Image 1 (cartoon, helix red, strand yellow):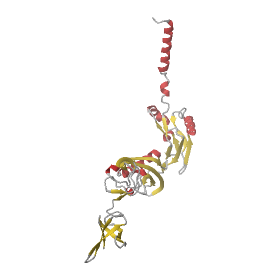
Image 2 (cartoon, one colour):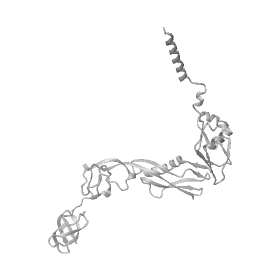
Image 3 (tube, helix red, strand yellow):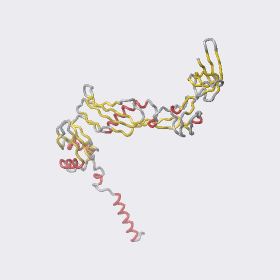
Image 4 (tube, one colour):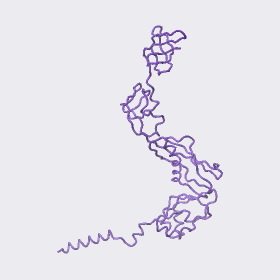
Length: 327
C-alpha cells in the first residue's frame, strides 16, 4: 500500500513526464517553419519580378502550395544593364505585404541581386565548372588533387540564351595558385566579355625525402632516403624520383625535406686532388704525363689539370677515372 505522501510524489512525477513528452497540436507546425528558399542572385527576362523568379519550394508543404504563391508580383524588373540590390529586411517586408506570413516562411539571404538576363551563375556553379575544367589536366600528374581558395567573379550573368561560359588558363595548370580566364562567348563564338579568377591546387604525392640531414658532398645511399607524402604546390622544382643515380649532394637537404634534383649532382669520375694520367694523342705519337686534377669532372667534361713536373696547367677531357685526354 502507498502512503499519501508517496502517492502525491508519484502523481507529480507522472504530471511532469506528460508535460515534457506530450506533443501539442501546434508543435508539428512549428517544427517546419521555413517552406521556401530565396535565391541570392536572380536573372530576369520578364518585366515583373514574381515570387517564382526568386524562390524555390523547400518541402512537400511548400510544393503543394506553390501554385498559390508562384505568380505573386513583387517588383518591377530592372532594365537592360541595370542591377538592383535589395536587403533582407526589404524582401521580408515585401513578401509579408503580398501574402501574410510569406516572409517568415522563407529563408532569405542577407541581400538579393537582380539583373536582366537569361541565366546567372553563382559561386558554387562557377567552382564546379572550374573544377571540371582543371581536374583532367591535373590528374595526369598523379597523386591526390584538391581545389581550394577559389577567387571567382560571382555572380556571372548571361544576357541571352545563346551565350555560354568557357574556362581557360594562360599557362598549363600546375600545383599552387593557378590563374583563370572566364570568357563569355556569344552565339558567333566570339568572346563578348572576359573575366578573371584563380584557384589554389593541392597535389599530394609520395616523394623521396632525406631520412637524415644531407650535407654538401655526401653521396646519397639507399639508407639516406625515406618516402613521404608531400604537397607539390609548395615544391617549385622537380623532385628526385628516388631511383636514378648515383648522386652526390650539391646543396644541403634537411631531414624530412624532399630531395630536389637541383640539390643533386652526379658523382664525379675524377675529383679535385686526384692524380691521373694526362694523355696527348697526336697523329703519330701518344704521350702520357702524371697530372693533378684541379676540379671535379664527369666523363666527357673539360677540366683543368696541373702537370706534376712542369706545374703548368692545361685543360683536358675526362676519359675515365684515371685518364684525362688532350687532343
